Image 1 (cartoon, helix red, strand yellow):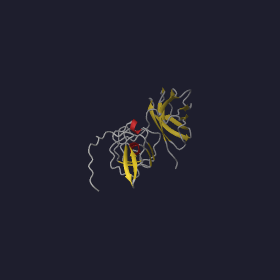
Image 2 (image 1 turned 90 degrees about the vertical axis):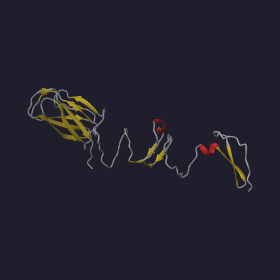
Image 3 (image 1 turned 60 degrees about the horizontal axis):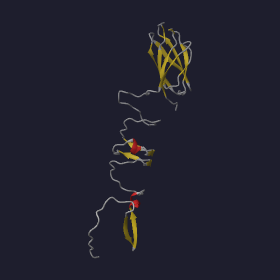
Image 4 (image 1 turned 120 degrees about the vertical axis):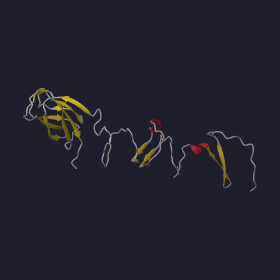
Length: 222
């Protein structure tokens, strides 16, 4: 084939939607348009190399495995439409995260000074009425119970805390928050929706309203 010289070509600018690239294949002239190349294109097993950044706002992934990905600077805008199911992230640095549940097979630990526990909003307070054997209701996983004003005694007394967050297999942690007298505190029953506190002073008889803190530790029997 002889060499054909082409001159005076127009300077290329941004491709318009209607631009056409002619291709001759098997004696038949075909055309490739800008829209065909770049609109809703389907890539079959492409090798993308290292993706440094980009907008994945409409990316839906199932069983995606991400190994040390570099996403640039994610924002609510460019990640808002990205839905992932069963994503596996290897050694990610998550920062501050929120969610409705977290299931792990290993230990959940904290090396910071904040520790592991309930956040603001999980707790509540309630004050006992009538007597120190009057039951109280507080449907929170943690909180403070203020006892009825009465003289302390070394004779054990009990009252029931009705609490919808409690399961029969849970563990209740108790401690004395305030009060002049020192109290022995015991959880003597745990049931679905309630637990019973039994208490007595070590020797004091002060008339006061001591406060007991509690926290529900979720547990299972098997």
